[in-house]
Image 1 (cartoon, one colour):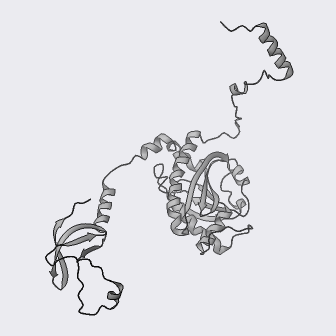
Image 2 (tube, one colour):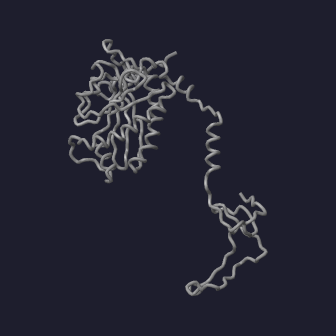
Image 3 (tube, one colour):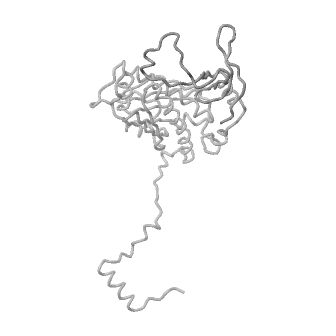
Length: 325
């Protein structure tokens, strides 16, 4: 049974309503559902599942950029995936400003191209860093010279080649940077109404930050769009321990060179005695002739040995192994 209000409670409620202290519509907004307009003339071909999987793929790509770019820029590089969204190519091109750095990448064997857009401020910083500067952007934007574009092209080729590994679970790619455009009007390689997915990444080179956008048309991904889902992506990214990686590591360790030294003994002398040392002088050490020597591998005492000779060289013969580790 519902609660029944007393006359005093009814009077207090009416007085609060008339004075404006109580809003009868308050609290209804929490129950309202948010309605999003859907344009049937331009249906979104990328589902939330597709966009989520693209984020996973490019998070792997971001880790590769963070590892490989410092080799060329000699600066700490941090890359983070911000978000992914589905928009028309016209909306993407309208958001570009001139000058702009657009790398047109052939996404072979898939048909069509994708666009890699790098913020112009980040491009200036990369050029400055590659030429030996501190990696600071230009205070005033200007057009890129041919030499600067050649330097940026080298970095874009590296970024293009790094796309192979993250996409290997979906499609074995052979991407190739075809050209760099600094004017967005010359990069109309798809129709304006073509749906594209935009993956936005934040790149920080030292103290300079900038955005990188990758524009992927639906027509390019359409042959493999069924593979762009989290279930397929996770199933093909299971770690397969076939022993090859272990064998490579073991071979590398076997061929690694490590320093080995035998300590004959230790002594302490004054600086004055050290300065006046002459050939024939004798330094007394803390070991006897019959004592065994300590053999160090790196900085770790590993063996005990006795001194001797082998052919024309001094040598030691190992007698025992220390198991201190």
